[in-house]
Picture 1 (cartoon, rainbow, N blue to C red):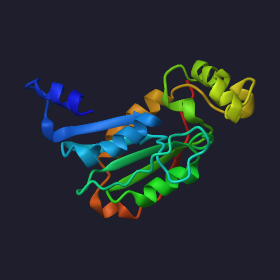
Picture 2 (tube, helix red, strand yellow):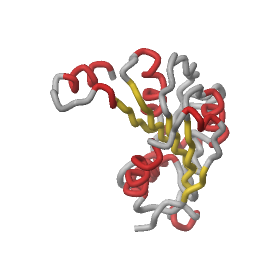
Picture 3 (cartoon, rainbow, N blue to C red):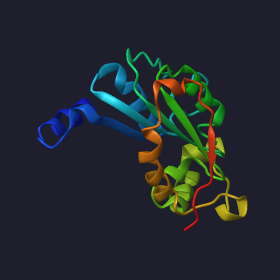
Length: 184
């Protein structure tokens, strides 16, 4: 991450006082650990991040410390039906996050809802050897299982600007909001 930020700083239009990171799953862990080693990080958006103290089998075993030494407003987005990164793990991360934070839970969604081409990604993940062993993703039509696809990327993008700025030091007593993905 430092390399990318260093490279971006070469651009005179890049504002070093407004560096924010967004990451999904292992990328979510990455954006949550980066503020420990890079003081330039001013905000974090973690989509279904790993890093809790009791990960499911096959999930990264690297517990986050949140030793940032400053307030880095953090927005968590989680999926209601996320099997690899269940909500109890996200709630643990929220409790341990010492900075301003917010949590939004997407209803009728799973771990793949934070990527493009959700239905194809869901099927690809379901058929990988690791996921088959874990039985994480159910076989069959996702719509028949009550999982809603479509519009989630636009839904998230539309709310990031509105939500990320609302993370203030006074918001330490968060109350999770439950959101429904838009249907295309």
